[in-house]
Length: 242
Image (cartoon, rainbow, N blue to C red; front, side):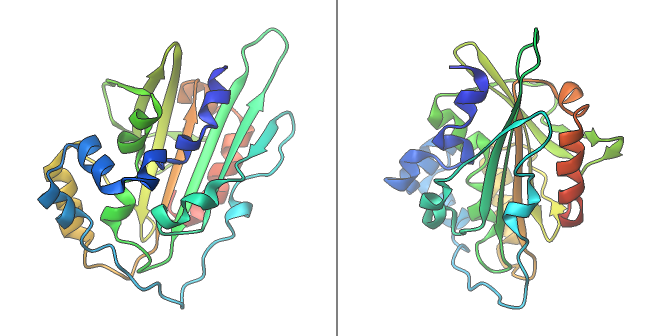
């Protein structure tokens, strides 16, 4: 398979398939967090969604077609609704093929939670750091895990940056976890202390909505950002905090 074909697998929506069978075990093993810490980390997860907040039109956040690009929309994400505690998500994979050049690929995944629908700590357990290794991708050390990137010469909110490798395929991953339209920094995504700080800082908050945005590509951002497609997606997400 090519890299962009692999990206569109089940786990690319940042939900481990094994989560559906043994969520607590996978989270504990994958993050290396003892059971007691895990209980604290997700202990504020039961929420009652507020009805006075209008959710965005998820399908409208990502172009369903774009000149020169083949667009594939994931159609099976709703089976993860119970695990993610939301049914508002969208994922589209964009591929452009130019003669004599390797395909350019980009997958964008977005999930959204109304205020009070899920705790920040519960949403944080579905980052690529936790779930991609369960899909067979090995993390590759990077010099900086938090980067400042731009689209169409306009800076985006600081992104979490990761690299994962499966056999010979390398994927660059940039993601944002937004609370009340502000990014949440992950100082060390595998640190129990950092995760506990997030749980304690945001665990009692109900006023803000949440959004998770992930870009992934076999190409570095310096190449991806040249594409008008990326500028269009960034413009649509900018009002929501990106």
